[in-house]
Image (cartoon, rainbow, N blue to C red; front, top):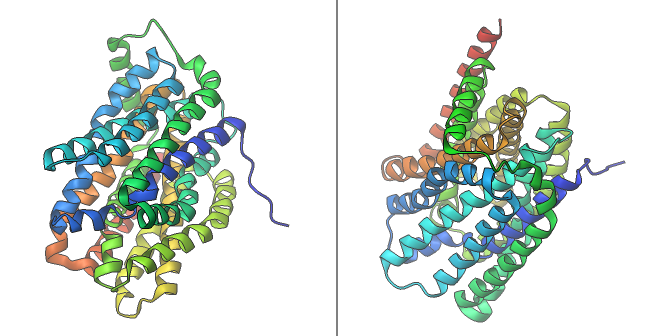
Length: 397
């Protein structure tokens, strides 16, 4: 008989906050690449726009990590969520290109505050199984994908984009309050009022030393390659469906909703798998899966239909979820004594990979096209995974 994997209260609350945040954001973010193209941006400029969001996220992460020593992480996470609300308001009032780019940078900074703080709460808490907890946490956006685009489509159809931004604004205000109420108490032990910048620098030195001595670096490299690949898909997958497969916006919406509904039970199985396997294997096997199914996706392009696109991307996304959860679990376990700096490192790592993936794919898309981009991206991930796995085994011996 099927049963849900175990979830601790702290993990449940953090996952719910993540879900509500992503629900409010994804009511309109699905249409973002289409929106950019409609504003006459070229394909390379679409990639640059994603870089403009994710790069500030990475750059601000160490500052957010330092602030977590001084301020309750739940308060900082709530402030980050409020930043998403301000972003929605800004998109309502947007005028001119400069202001548009300013809101993207603000979104990146807000995301840094949220993700560093929420990861710090999880990493600083005595979790029973870190990989399982982060499996729940990273699956939250897939749950939001199941219904958020449909809700967003209704508001856009009924009230134009102004309606969906107002809805997002209200939901993010609610989420910020929910985050503060639910997570303030478990986050409290992380505060150290005597902490200063020099202490933070010392902690980062300890972290980089730990990464080297505990042979974590090869697995971080695998995870980074998977994040680069994710950047390819984040920037161009929807445009691929529209331009290459000639899908309508309605069909793309149906696809995203069906994909996310099906991924929900799959994610439960993956979380059960994560708690039975060590972090290193999760990173390696997840990387191989993500790379392999990206290659299959590219080669299958001439015969792709709704069902085949759905099945291949379910498998690729499953690999990415396993890999990302394994990475965060590994960082959390190895750097348990410095959760604030560990969470900052993890938050720098993830968006930086996606940002550079979007930038690289934006530069290559005009020369390679969609098919070669997805195939070469998959080959690169598998190559990195095999090389790094061999290096980790040689270091262990």
